[in-house]
Image 1 (tube, rainbow, N blue to C red):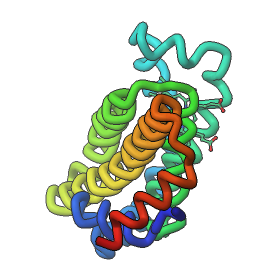
Image 2 (cartoon, rainbow, N blue to C red):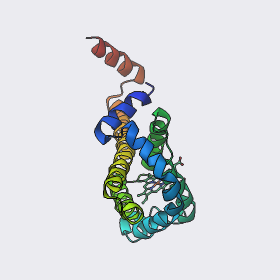
Image 3 (tube, protein in one colour):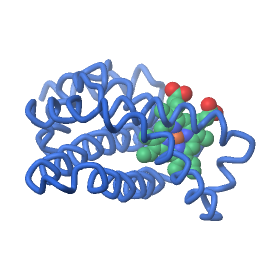
Amino acid sequence: MARDFEKLTQYAKSFSGLTPEREALLVEVGEKIKPKLAGVTEDFYRYLLSIPEASSFLEGRVESLKKTHVRWMEGLFSGPFDSSYTEHMYKVGDVHVKVNLPVEFMAGAMTLINNRLIELIIETYGDNQKYCADILVAVSAVTGLSLIVMQQSYQESSLADELEKFLKISGMSRALFANLAAAYRDK
Ligand code: HEM
């Protein structure tokens, strides 16, 4: 069944607190922050490469991943954060599922990114305490939303794997399973 990305967007926003005001704030600070994201990305990969479990996934790909990563980070300060953003993040999650990246790498990497962004925002806007605090909350909201969506890909892909296993073990056809599931849903 096709994924309802509008519904997933609202669901992820309800947890992350990404309000229209925070979205606007991210776009507002984008002009000043985006030129500094290449540096954040350099630090991110230097850190990841120092983690043995992570570095093996990066061999031979670091330079191209850095480019992809900067583009993704620029998106955090560009918007719009609508169902097409959610669909994109869902696919990004899926790419990581396909390369067998452990699910905790998503939360781990997002924590590293947040740690570095917090420093950058304070360096840039620390003079204005209230404004700075509002930006930090907005960054936490958009990275939180991105993480929720990527983890949904992991969850759904592991359910799909379980179903594959069940069909193989039981010998049940996919059509029979779909009919049984539909009958159960109608109850
Ligand atoms: C916050 C977490 C992360 C984000 C937002 C992110 C973002 C991205 C994006 C946007 C892509 C390109 C997807 C596409 O092809 O459409 C990608 C691919 C990839 N990422 Fe990440 N990434 C994250 C964490 C990590 C970590 C922790 C690792 C490894 C330690 C990693 C390794 C990879 C690999 C191997 C690919 C596929 C490269 C390829 O074969 O094309 N990512 N990532």
